[in-house]
Amino acid sequence: MNKAAGSSRYIFFIMIFLMYVISYGDRAALSISLPALGQEFSLSSVQMGWVSSSFLWSYFLLNLPSTILLDLVGARLVGSLAVSVWSCAMVLGGLTQNVTQFILSRMLLGVGEAPTFGVGATIVRNWAKPHERGTVMTILLTGMQIGLAGGTIAGAYLIAKVGWWFEFMALGAIGLVWALAWWLLYRNPAKTAAQPRVRPIRFSEVCALFRSSTFCGILVVQCTQNFLNFLLMSWVPFYLIHELHVNVIGSGSGTAGCYVLGAIGAVILGRIAEHIVFRKHADPSHRRFIVAFCIIGSAMIGVLPFFHQETPILIVLSLSLCCLIAANGANTAMLADMLQDGQKIGSVTGVTLTFSNALGLTAPILTGYIVSYTGNFNMAWYSCSVALVLAGLISLLTVRKPIVMA
Image (cartoon, rainbow, N blue to C red; front, side):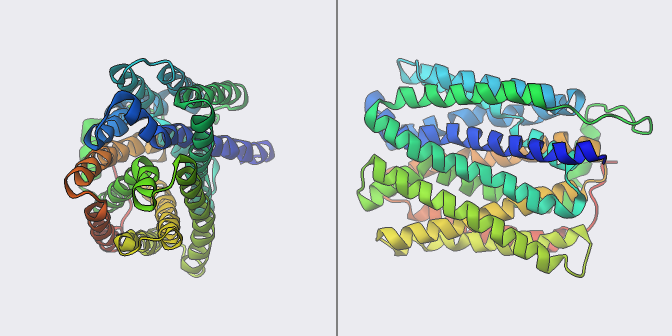
């Protein structure tokens, strides 16, 4: 890595961080506006669950195709195009007149957001040094929580003062600015003569992934953390209104505080864990100890039903988010570390996202049914807690050898 590339990579990391901020700010726009949207379109809790998951329908279907394109043409074009598409979808969402139009705009949002994490994983694999990938990825992924916090609290005030439609259009405009800046600033890394030409991932290589116990262990963690992440992202503002009987601004402030504290805690936790685990050992598979510790720590979400006051509820949510973000960063870095063919990192990330998002998209829907039939969120929290503990144990037992796609 030459000196120029070494200094430029920090700009690229900052841009990816901002991409995650914008992406999750756009996702938070729906969760905080869900009560107002439900009232305007006369939606039940079950229907709100389906609306919350609608962007995931196209998102998970296009995770793999979009990341295959990413590996072929590079992060410059795909990054700019993806953010442009989802930002236009946000603007269109603010112009909709009925729930059908709104769902279509959310599906277009999913089309644009499909390669997001593939772009991030590609940038980390290409520009971060191996020993720093876990820390870099965790820091970048905190952009998700900052975006959720900013989108939630800004959205709450915009909804209260102007209306939910303006919130969507304003966030869409911010994304279009990012897309232009990425096109102007980023350049794909130069190929050397020794590097083989990148070809699309083959079906046989995808099958080989599932014969790898390491890949399966990483995928299990990705699936369970995605389920809880989408549940929290879709329902936390509504949960706080339901449980604490606060208004939309109070719900937005509480949710944003949890996201910010979770993000800060995740960076500190991830850095300390990496220092302890890699102090004497350089084996990348040892990162599974960090993943297991953090993902099991996030299972504390299961104690939420025992609290009914604001302070303990927000503390539990913040601590669970802290562990969940740190686990996600370590698990994503472990995929980049353990994959033998680094040129396929975008496509392999797409495979993991296809399966994990297929499960994750059920989280808002199932939670809607749970709330409708039980009148509370308790069963959702209990189920997630058990699944997270099992995922941590599976990671410990299965992640050992490099992932070979042959």
